[in-house]
Image 1 (tube, one colour):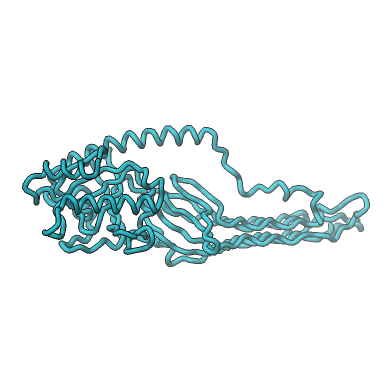
Image 2: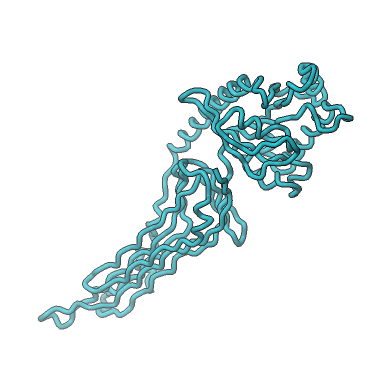
Length: 371
C-alpha cells in the first residue's frame, strides 16, 4: 500500500444567485406588484471522515474543488435553485489546517464526522421583499454573496492502535512482518523505514488491532534530525507504544545493556520534547533479539535495573517469533478494555451533541436588514 499522509487543496464554494427585480404583467392589471424571486444558495463544500479510506492519495491529484453557483431569481415569484454541495471523503484521523496561517481548523477523529470547509454564498433577495406601504413598486434587489474560498492542508495521523518505536535496526519492520499482514522492506543493516507501515494483527475471526511501524528515531528527531520527526505525529493517535530495544548492539566493544539503556533514554527524551501527551502514553518495553544472547533473563534483569523500569516488559525474538504470541494476546486484552472505555465515553458525548445545519442562516430571513 502506498502511504500518502499529506496533501494541499483549494476549495471554492459557489456564489449565491442574484435576486430579481420584476413586476407582474397581467391583462387588465395595469399596476401589478413586485414579483422578483430570491437567488439560490451557492454550493458548499464539506469533508466527511470515512473509515473505509486509508490514504490522502486522491487529493494529490485532485487539488481544486469548486462548487457551482446558485441560480438567479426570476419573475413570477420564482426562486433560483440552490447549487449542489460537494462532499469530500477523507480518512478518519485527518487533521485540516489553513495552509496560509497554519491554524488547525478541524480534526476528523471519528467515522462520519462532518465539517464545513467552505460555505456557499447566500442568494440575494428579490424586490418582492422590499414592498411597503410607501414603496409600492420597489426596484431594489440584492446580489448574491460570494462563497468562501480557502487553501487547506490535509494531514493524516495514522489511526493505529499500537505504535512501534525504537532506534533504526531495532527490528520493528521484522516484528510487524512477523505478527501482521504487512510486508515492509527488511535488511540487516542500520537503515530506517522511509514511511509508516500499517499491519492488521488478527487474534481471532472477530478480534484484531492495527499496528504501525514508525520510522526509526535518532537523537534530535524532535528538532528535525533524521526522518523520525516527520512521523512522530502518527504516534499521537495510538493507544499504547511498544518501545523495541536491540539488546545485542552494533558495537562489540560496548556493553549491550548500557547501550540499550542509553537508546531507551534518548527516545524517551525525544518523545518528551515533541509532545507531553505523547510522552505520557502507556509504553511497553519489548526486548528484541534475545535469541542471539546466551543469558536472556540476565539481560532483561540488568536492563530493567539500569532503567529503573517498573512498566510492562516482554522478551521476544522478532526473527524466530519466540515470545511474540504472549505479546500479541497481552496487547489485544489491553486494547479491548481501552476501546470499551472509549466507546462508553463517545456514547455519552453523542447524547448531548446537536448537529448544526449549515444551510440555515437566520439573518438571511431578516427582512429588516435588507438594503
